[in-house]
Length: 136
Ligand code: HEM
Ligand code: HEM
Image 1 (cartoon, rainbow, N blue to C red):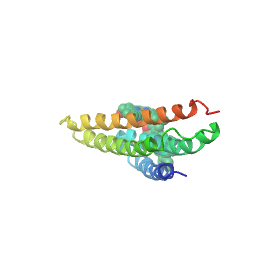
Image 2 (cartoon, rainbow, N blue to C red; image 1 turned 90 degrees about the vertical axis):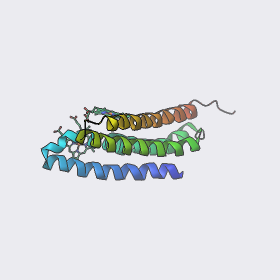
Image 3 (cartoon, helix red, strand yellow; image 1 turned 30 degrees about the vertical axis):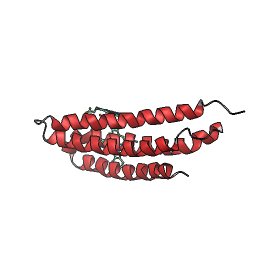
Image 4 (cartoon, protein in one colour; image 1 turned 45 degrees about the horizontal axis):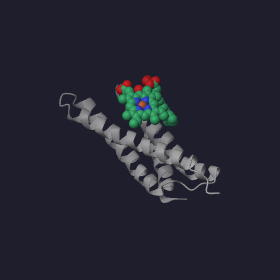
């Protein structure tokens, strides 16, 4: 198993753990529900997407009998997906507690774009693998 595949799966489980604690905090304290975006995206971009990236990178090339187009891009995607998610959620929380500055909103969007770039790298690497011409 490639190192970035193992790391995607490991981080995915860590995000599930943090998101679940956040979910319980929202149950316990209704004002926390204003940060529902943090809980939902820790779950959906952290737990769910990263588990799919990890399993997808490992299994889909084997299903199609072709090597992954670029393990290097997979490694880069791992870092961009994590930096984008953590940065986006961190600045979203700062923005919601200090809405007047505007700086935090810009930074939330910048890290959101980093996350979107990581999604694009997965999109490219998977499709370039699955639709690669066979060598026979
Ligand atoms: C211990 C586990 C969990 C707890 C205690 C929990 C708790 C909550 C709470 C309290 C809310 C806010 C509901 C409201 O708007 O009043 C919420 C929203 C949400 N949760 Fe969880 N959750 C858990 C796990 C999950 C998981 C595993 C996922 C996805 C894989 C998930 C996805 C979502 C989403 C997408 C929302 C937003 C839904 C909406 O906007 O209506 N949650 N959760
Ligand atoms: C680059 C990636 C993504 C960005 C920048 C993003 C951004 C957002 C934003 C700004 C909202 C509205 C939050 C609000 O009402 O304050 C939202 C809501 C939502 N997104 Fe995403 N999203 C991304 C990826 C995803 C993915 C991959 C999923 C599902 C697998 C997803 C599922 C949802 C759901 C269920 C909601 C409604 C629940 C909520 O309000 O928290 N998003 N997203």
